[in-house]
Image (cartoon, rainbow, N blue to C red):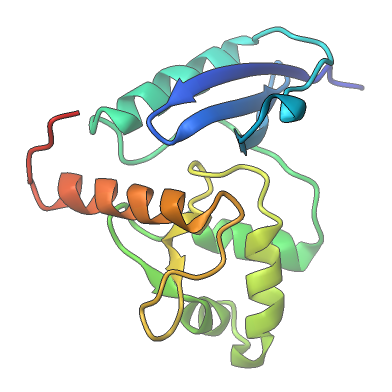
Length: 166
């Protein structure tokens, strides 16, 4: 059975987000940095995409820490494993690429883990922004390091009960 893929957009505090999905799951949540990245495919919004948008609003307002919309992206068994592990990094916490590699059972797979992290097409919901360098540096984020920093600071403020003005 072929699922129709729809696209919609949400203006977030970290810029325009492109939401791609079907009637059953979210397949893409990516950052749009210029109008050339806007998809001119089949615009529309399914109930799942509407739920995703509502959950993003709650996340950015500090009211949601865990997303529960169904997600799916194509990938190898290894990639699916890494993306699954990302879902277990708690809101407001970080993990290094090495720690993530060890969690999947192979410390030597650090480069493959980093590459898989970079291929994640469902930003924020599959929280690849929570993976940092072993030296605690902010490295490797396809949405831009400024967004990674913003997302981590946002989660830290919410986790530690610090009020924000936005």
